Length: 245
Length: 269
Ligand SMILES: Nc1ncnc2c1ncn2[C@@H]1O[C@H](COP(=O)(O)OP(=O)(O)O)[C@@H](O)[C@H]1O
Ligand SMILES: [Mg+2]
Image (cartoon, rainbow over all chains, first blue to last red; front, side):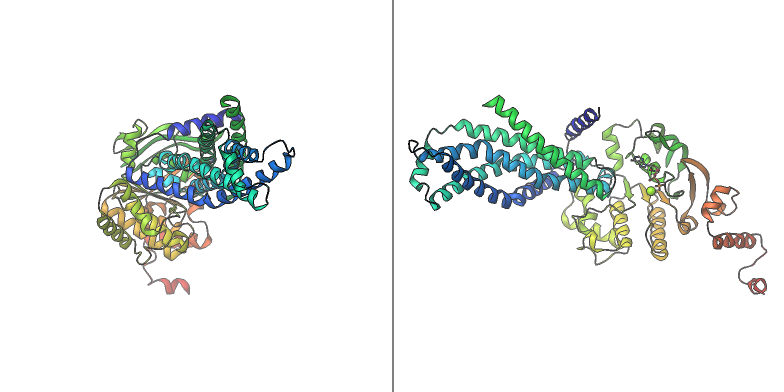
């Protein structure tokens, strides 16, 4: 029962976001601000996890492929596909659910509790449009970009690990990268990235926007939004894999 | 003028505002007084539409607020200024940006024009040299003044203040009260103030309604409040012995038994 009221409220929030901006310029400014907050703000962590996850997948793939019958370039091919299909979109978005999600939830929660949302509302501003929509759009624009960057860096990290440990030469890795490449995989990765971007921005926005109480509740809303968006990301991951692959 | 007719508002089982009617007049400071938890904030939020009342009607200059379309309400709200209990300043913005925000949103003026207006209102609330400070860096009294500046920057017709002097020392709160009073008469706006501060009641209470457990228990002016026989009101207003004595003195003085300070010496003998 509780779930349905929450879900209904969530849908109403999404619907309420679409209204005519009072002043386009201010909304654009807010959108650009969010793009830089979300994009630049989480670039560092994305770079680090991407390189390591690529490196680790090269080492582990090499460890599992013990047969001398399989050419070494296959390692690169497997690394490429796992990074593009799963690691970059899903792993990065799970991490971003923590980084971006908790930030959105606590920012909105704080604004709610300290009556800043009421203050905006009193001025005649639609706060759902002004506060939530730019965050959502910024996530949808920026997070897929981060996923693409992550895929490139992941593969590069894999290559680096491969050559540094002497598992395979750079040339063999590059050869493997070109083997059986399916552009559809990139499409699939982006489809996931857009879906996850929507989840990890709208769920925290919902929990933050409707916080009631004080600092303690903001913390709770933030934790809850991260947990719920992570579960939903994994669920959506399964659903999309079942539907699109 | 704002007219309230039979407003009711509850949360779940709990009735917070029970059938309150009142008139808030233009050019006057209209006070809503009552203990903490008596529903002052809820009533004020009903007035401005942050809460939807369960029943009853609100009229802004004769126009029914509940029947207004969302567009119409938005328009009206640009003529409403509100000071919140915790000031509600945007903490990612400087004082100047806070006050400029309504101008940025609703006017097409150049930056220079907007800055001039911002400095005008900051000057009006006696706040200089704080333009570049962030809310976290200024005192409670300054925050309230920035809140007032932000509320009046668009020349509102209606001003709402939720406990403008809670958490302030008596001197600063008196300054804030005077400021609100001056602004009200200067621009001839309809001002509604929530307070449980005795000084404000006596200082600026042109029109007072006393809330008790969600009901309007008493209404009148600061001149009448002294002579009120309402037991609940007297217990609330003249809570300390000191104030009770002060009230008795003032009543004697008004009846002509005590004249200024002249008879004081005799009295004290
Ligand atoms: N959003 C809300 N949900 C539930 N109860 C509320 C809400 N806001 C206020 N109340 C209740 O309404 C009563 C009056 O609160 P309020 O108007 O804030 O009092 P005050 O006169 O101190 O401003 C309180 O008992 C409070 O618990
Ligand atoms: Mg209150």
